[in-house]
Structure formats: C-alpha cells, structure tokens
Image (tube, rainbow, N blue to C red; front, side, top):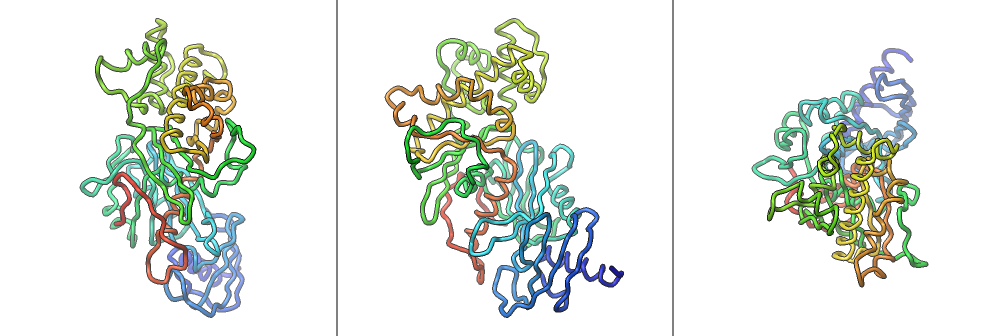
Length: 416
C-alpha cells in the first residue's frame, strides 16, 4: 500500500469514528494493519439515501473489524459501563432492522490506573484512532449538582465537564444495573449459566430481577412488553435480615445496637471482606486475608475454613435477598445474578446454601420453585444494555430505530 492510500484510509477510519463518510471516493477497497486497532478492511459503496443518525451522507462504508461487519453510516457512539473497579468501553454500531447493537471495539480499564473517566475515554479513542461524538454512560449513583454521586466510584463523574473536555455532542447517563437489565431481554442461553432451573415444563415470560453484587450492591427489574420497561431500585440499601444463630453474631460484629445495616454491607466485594473479618473475631482467628479476591480464592481452593464459611454466609444471604425481590416483583422470568466474581464461583454457589435459602420462604416456596436463577458475567452486557437503552430512547429527527422505552429510575437518567 502506498503512502497516499494509507493517508486516505486513515481519513476513512477517522471519518467512521466521527460518523462522517465524505472523505473517500467511489469503488475502492483498502486494507491496513492499524497499529492498535488491529486489521481492518474498508470497502466503499455508493448509497442512494441519506437517512440515519449521522446526518446526510452519500456514501456508506462497510467496515470489518475484529470479525464484526457494520456500516459506517451506523457507527456513531460510545457506550461505557463504569463501576468501582473497572470501566468497560465499547464503540457501538446499531444493528440492521432494529436488532441488537453490535460492538465494533471493546476494552476494559482499571479505574485506579486513571485520574478520571475522561482519561479512560481519551485512551480508548486514541487506541482506535476514532472520535465518536456521543457517549452513553452506565454507572452507579444519582445526579446531584452536576455530578454523579456514588461512594463506590473511584473519582467524581461530572458529565458536563467530560463533554467539554472530550468535545462530545452529548453525554447520556443511566444506572449501571438498569443497563444490565436492558441486556437480559436479549441474552442468549449460552451467555448465562443456570444455577437453579424452574420447576415448570415451560418457563414463564415474566419480570426478571437483576442483582449485581460488586463494589456495591445494585438491583433492577426488567418487565416484558412492547416496549419493555426497566425499573431501577435501591434495594441494596434495605435492611439486612439476619437469622438466629451465626448470622446474628456476625451482625453484632458489623454494627452497634439499633443501627441500620444494609444488604450492601455484606453482599458486595467489601462486604465479603467484612464477613470474613467478623467471623475471624468470632472464631478468634487473625484475619490474614486482606482482599475479597483472596478470600474467594482461599474459599474455592479450601485452604481457609473461615474464608469458606464467609463465602457460604455470603451465598446464603444472597439467596434470601434474591428471593425477597422475586416475591416483591413477581419475577416469574427469573433472577439474574450479575458480577464478575460470581461467574467464577458457580460450582461453589451450587453447593452453598444459596438455592435452599432462596426457596426457604414458607408458603411462598411453590412460587419460588418456578423461578429460575441464572448467573451472567458482567463482561459486555453492561455496554450492550446501555447501547440498547440509548438506541430505543433516540428521539432525534431522522433516527431510524424503534420506539421509546419507558424507564423508571431513581434520579440518574439524564442527558447533558
């Protein structure tokens, strides 16, 4: 490839990222090994219409990147799923005929490695050599005075400042569990592991509850329909219910008398560490494991009996919490447990008290026997859900995608 063609391809690559298609001429096929984005094939085709979210264009580009084929006239925005530990970013292309959004490129970053979210987005764009103009951001918390308020985020998230710093046309926000809930409606059977099958021959297509223990504890509910709806909740902050026995002993270690202790206090990464430390105090053991990952690893291997007890307590409380939400929202469609570390401990959860605690709700046991429990890795589902929410809520003139979905949220849904 000569230098002139390489320059033209670079112009095309940037044009794709910016949602433009005016930097090329007709009838060319280019190939280049992008130093960071990987091998790309760009094919130009003439189009006869100019509809779409990227404005009037006379040319569409078919781009093959990492095995995914999309058209440049449909490549237009970033989706980000930001938690307390990781930020997951994707370049998104709307699928044809209103189908599931396609991920053109995807990266995961450790939040602690970057001074702010703007730096992560800038790194992602530089790696791809692209500059999308829209960002849809899924994260925990709520909006107050121009900032996202969440004790679990590594740094403040200020959408307007981020929009200005990155030269974006818009920044849209939604709750991180809301994004995961939007994803469950289109998850394939091979993308989730069944922890408990429903005791019915034909599973019901009812509401689905998504529970996400991570740096914090989130929960959201997906309701089927045309269009579907998602309800976000702050169920993680409801009062922790402890049973008589070791749970009450642990609860006494976690808080003073007559004080509020939430489910998030125990059903999260930091919560698992609190359980371990509390059990060490009860068992008169030194708490040698300082990180939730170390506790999980020791419990799975069987090296530490207190770590194993802590993880069993965690699973028991998780089953009880999930059952409460299933009864509250009539979740005949099932429970989805979402979280990176949960996907690594499915075998442990199957042997733990989780399922029995889920079912042990007195006269509601027959109902809960019909409710399946599935485990989904966080992975790409958050960005797919955020992208789906964005596309289905698009109301700009000329946007070709479907109807606006209804979302009920506790204060984070916003556009800057």
